[in-house]
Amino acid sequence: QVQLVESGGGLVQAGGSLRLSCAASGLTFSVYAMGWFRQAPGKEREFVGAISGNSGNLDHADSVKGRFTISRDNAKNTVYLQMNSLKPEDTAVYYCTARRVQRGLGSSWSSDGVYYYWGQGTQVTVSS
Image 1 (cartoon, rainbow, N blue to C red):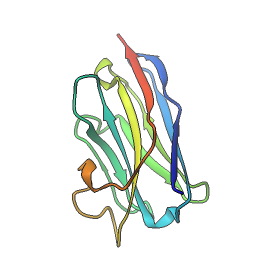
Image 2: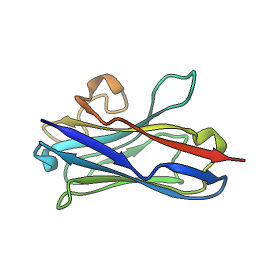
Image 3: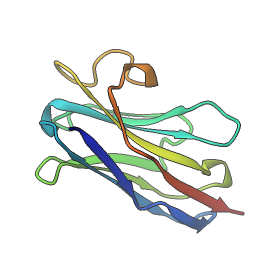
């Protein structure tokens, strides 16, 4: 049974930082591309970042480039999202997700419809 468990969310002031973690179990972690998505109230879920199994391929949404960094530790079956220079518009529930791919990030990696497994989400609130 695959499980993705996010942690690290919370309340932070604008300009602050948070690091989200997602611990995976029940899968061969290194062959899965991992992603982070977020969903704000009243809005659709949106892509934040993705990373390939060997960390050789990364991508981040334009809205977070230069501020957020996705990374992973395959020895710990964990993917991270380091979030710096947070803004009130970053407020959302952040979800970790996984998909098995042949290489790299796979196709359409910024689309939530291609991911197989999802965590329960962790709330990030940025106050102004």
